[in-house]
Image (cartoon, rainbow, N blue to C red; front, top):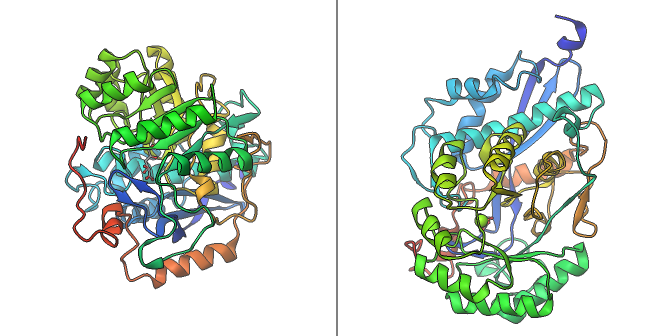
Length: 435
Ligand SMILES: O=C([O-])C(=O)C[C@H](O)[C@@H](O)C(=O)[O-]
Ligand SMILES: [Mg+2]
């Protein structure tokens, strides 16, 4: 082994679970908890370089991250093609990985499987390896992925129905106020546009009866004429309702996101409307692609490097989508700047990125970086700083980790239905289709 290769050997892995403030954003399952768990990964190399990664921080992910962290010691950050097999080997027997298939309680990502959990953990390590490799080589992550094809990545505003504050005044308070009707949604969109320059808007639906949400989209269309709009009820509607909404909003929507749940129902909707259907629920693994694409169930896949197993897998997904003539964009749920930087690096390398990417980041007032990423004209610049181009703020990390340590366990696993029960004790996760 050459000295240069030795310097890329992983000597230490630090896993730091944290709790991050999250506003009372509503979705079809309930409401976000006041704090949400994330896991920050640091890989330290023989050459003294630290690579950063971020992924879900719920207990079931932490249980998988620990054995993978130990197994990485002594390996090179460049050994990425063997990571999936390593993860399957060392995470395979963990209770989380063998858990029964169930619908995710907070992620709204369809059926939860052992593979999906493992890939989400693996993705955080892959990003940390790429960051360390890039920092060591003096190259940005996008260069390690073959180079960028664009200098700026476009994002859309992610609008949510929301309360002014969490039930009982828990958690941190922000100054966004409530948004529970069309006027509130338009005001929120206006602030997103003025502050960040976003020019396309996605509304998280499935919260109110479809007619109310149709009215909100109509109000957005009137306020932002000609600008791309999307609505995503996370599978809450029946085929019939989906088709009704598609025909009511067909003239203003860029695409309809997961109107109904499951590939079969999405295929039925797709057959009945010319409006493209997007998903981050029924196609979230390579195994799900053939069934959905051959039935014409989706026209846009919202990729997410956490789901698909990393940045390189996201590029593989992009190639498959291109082959089938299916569009590509990017999904997000609550994340911090490390994941946003990773999303941006890979998004910069994909030629056929057909739509502005989603990001929850503007809702996150806390981060673990010394400097927040800044949207300008609704876009993030893709720099050439080595690695991901971000710097960890150890003091902030310690504060957010202390919050995790001090929690009695009630917030360490995201559960939007449990959070909703604070306001409505009888609340149960609605059965789908809800309308
Ligand atoms: O596009 C999506 O489905 C999401 O972003 C899922 C998220 O979990 C979102 O609905 C949320 O955080 O409430
Ligand atoms: Mg979605």
